[in-house]
Length: 86
Image (cartoon, rainbow, N blue to C red):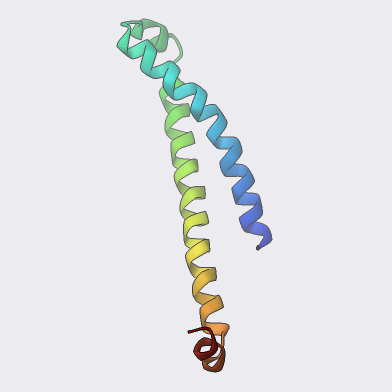
């Protein structure tokens, strides 16, 4: 696996942890009518938006990396190898 993919996978995992904490807390506060508490922390929604954006970027990279590496592997195989495996 490429070094960048390993780093992105680690970053993606570490970004997921705060999201797993922030999103349920935010949902509970909004649904319970405690919106004033969220208004006291003005950057609350901005932090969530930034984390979601970073998760989307790293997740997209990891998804595309898998597809691209699979395509490269299939192109490297010779037609003789393909006929033996079929």
